[in-house]
Image 1: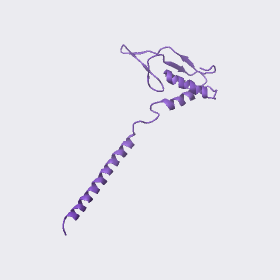
Image 2: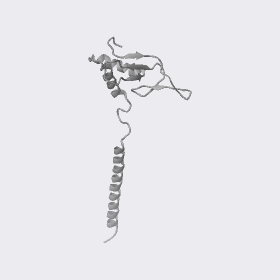
Image 3: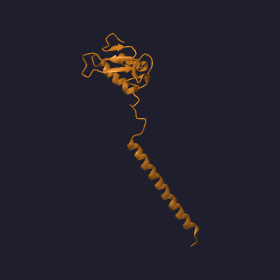
Image 4: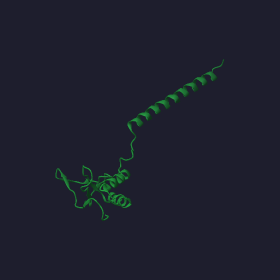
Length: 136
């Protein structure tokens, strides 16, 4: 990290046990399991409450370092802003992959409308064939 970094880094492994089994921790940004060497970042005093604490995997930590190096901001909020920028890029829910219920409802209605138009056209085709085949 750069010498003027405002947060603390703790590299000890955070272990949580539930029911006698080890529960691996997840990265605060990408939500992937961090099996080896999770990094804990804590905000220092000087930023507005509440003070945040993040557990990061190495990939997200490197992206955060890169964002901090690009930043010209030197306030105590520097870490929180950089964390938000990295999370906006790497968070899995930042971009919706599953369509919303409104989109699914529109797709259903569009399918019904398409089938209705096709059946209407087929009905008219049958009527025209009957008129054409039946002698006058």
